[in-house]
Length: 199
Length: 404
Image (cartoon, rainbow over all chains, first blue to last red; front, side, top):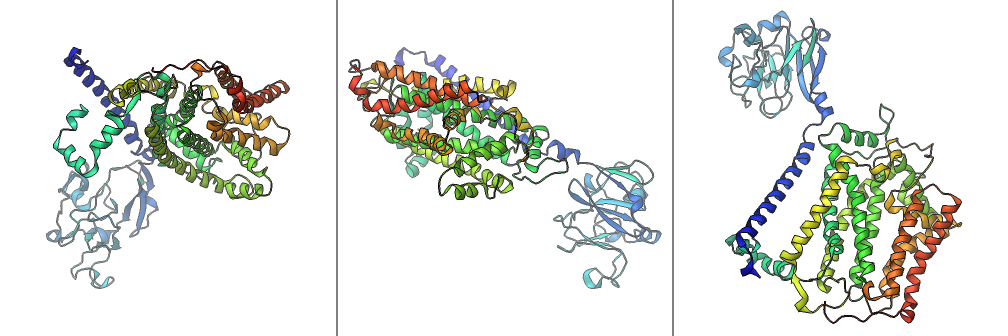
């Protein structure tokens, strides 16, 4: 039998049929993997609308965007002043290290400092860039209100309870923290004076 | 290809630790199969393929399906909505669900043809009795799995189908009510029923996979029957690989062509594979105007309906399946294949027609004529099995050939 058969023709058919089968099997994997990616209804929830006018001066509100917590702080004049004067304590005072900590609208040194389209409303992702815990809001400077959980020269901002990372009132990470980066700024824009769409 | 692979160092390493070479030789490259098998012998491997498709698609559907009868804001239920979410929102969810739903019907098409092959060529006879019995167990588990799965979309047919079938158990004397409540987890089909049916629907295919392993093992001990139904001379066998792997692969190609056509172009098969009423959410206060099980259960549904007494109907339905276990001993003829049994051949073909008639009756709304037809078919269903006891006394079989 074998010596009469055209082996090269047989091998070609073998490889061709096997190859087609492999391509078909590979194509069949696509829908199964794709099904595990976010579904249409999950993607539809990818944007969040919020009225920052509802946040009282000095107040912090945590809202949800794509299932992640987002800080919205209404910064008073006093809080805005706390942004200045400690650049030497910061890992990345101008928010330049990675794309996630900056945005297109950060086109002036002022905006890079305040990290907000409207300086009085800071909106950032509330996940510590170390391992994702939600930092505690400790806005007043010094140790008076917070004890030794913060350093003596505390400029006011956030303190992460998980591993002690510190951020200033513009959510910029302070040197010596385990967190590598400032809190991330997600895309957002103002639809009206106070209506914000996040995402 | 396989020989080249088996000469690699990796394979040698594996073989020394697993005996892989001996397994491959005894089960594939040196496993003897009669050389005269026809295409009816393709359905075993096809059944294995469909089982694999069902388990794979089922695992993915379970990632999105939620077994809860709790009401949602839309006025439907969590289960019903989660199925609609699979259809509309989950990427390729429609494809995976249709593959699973069409796969269920395909599974029964393939398995019923596989069983018909066994009946026609006498594959259930010695020495293959255990192989046949394991096969009947597989059939019962499949029917259970299909029944449990049909409740999950929590549509009208799901709900009322489950209500009717769980009521069947209630018809049994003494233990009936206990069994019924055990199945339902309540006094009617409801949220607890849905939860346990989901659990069992996941369990049964795993049982199937294990028992199918036993079925194949039993086959490989006694080896395949063949269209002539005679014991095969070693000289008339060919190795499973490559001869029957290639033939099975061809069958897979034909099957997948038909399967994909249905999945992509006609997934509901005109209401036979997915009943239209099941797109109406379950309502425990209103039964649909016409209620029938999915096509693959309708023959047994007709047997159930053919009796005036509820208990008798339930017992007859149970007996119609249980009698399959005893078939190897009911049939006393020494000759296996219908090719050499002229009377049996007529009887078994009539039996196939009878099962199709039973299926048709069960799918249609009951009328007096259909009821009578169903009763006659039910009568023949049982007559077939008992006639086999005495048939060898009358049947003049044709002389068997010595070799194929």
